[in-house]
Image (cartoon, rainbow, N blue to C red; front, top):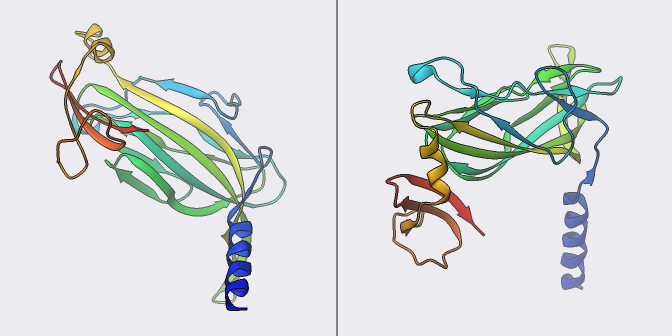
Length: 223
């Protein structure tokens, strides 16, 4: 009887964890207001700032297409980060990371007002020339009201559905030697290490730190 009860609880948890797909509540738009399709891959190489303030922004925003407030969240899978940090200020908080991998709830879910548009403020902050790739999974959350000093304030509640997913590719090009970046595709892996710095074999799976024959060191996830 105890085993049946535990199995029933596990089944309910699995059902609760499996959110549906919703591609209509939110719409990703570019800096010109053009809609970005679900599953799209976008390329960015235009820089802003200089020195330690240099970054490559996306200029993307998320629009609430409904007439009611919606809870919104974001998961980020950072699959490549040659150097520097990846940053995202969405929906409300800002966070930076230099860790390759999947980041569930990269920032706390927030509220996107009815028919409102909010900048994603996602950028790569490179230290030197290279590339960065991230997949952004937007999520629809319920809206709950929390009373504070007698005032009802809307907050994001439980996950309801998965919205659009897009991939952003960043490239910081060397203007004096653009062809040098293309050599990454032809460079051979000289040595490969895991996240702990232990050297691993060519059939290793997971987060790998690779030293290339062109002198560069990159992080990537091998599946």
